[in-house]
Length: 278
Image 1 (cartoon, rainbow, N blue to C red):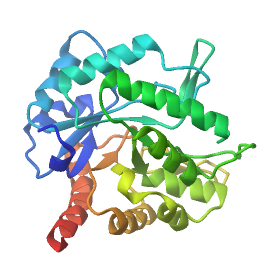
Image 2: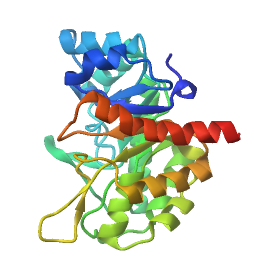
Image 3: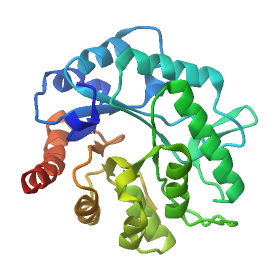
Image 4: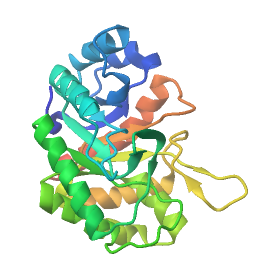
């Protein structure tokens, strides 16, 4: 089972949940991992991923290709990603619209950039190169925004749409990122979502967020259940896109597998309702 059409609502795969994830037979369930944690030759972690992969679709969601950097993706990293993709045959490979490397140094964060035409050409070239090396279409995720960056020449939705047009890539729509960014930057989340090319959305992410203590800033922390305003935006998105593989992300304060599965069932029920209406 390695196609997007077989995917409903999924969960981020955590080591403490390997056995329960492997045994679970929930309808439409799939799992997503950061490939950087599995780009190894062997060992128990990779063995568990391959075991889970035998029963469930798996998606690779990268955090270190640094597609918005002022250079091409690291050739060694890209080769290791290709090897992992060939090994596990993921339903989808995705990356962030951000940068994390600078002149040979790696920053453990997803950093913003001015959306200029020069940046557009550079990022499109990096996406095209990545797709050529991997031999597959990838999806690009919209980031969370916390500070105002000067020098933008493109709106974010137009920038994403143009990347799709130039490279043939898809989009990974993170609804929580849209909500967090809208609150922090003061734009209309619904208008942002309506401006995005719905046909290009290959996957959707839902996650929790938190407030920065003593400030109005929201942080895409992935350490809490999905908030109700984000669920409302998700329903709005599905009305435009139709069913799309949807991931519940939790990367901190990780609860028991059953609790995550219950939250995942809420997304699955919305997807199932659309299937019945179709």
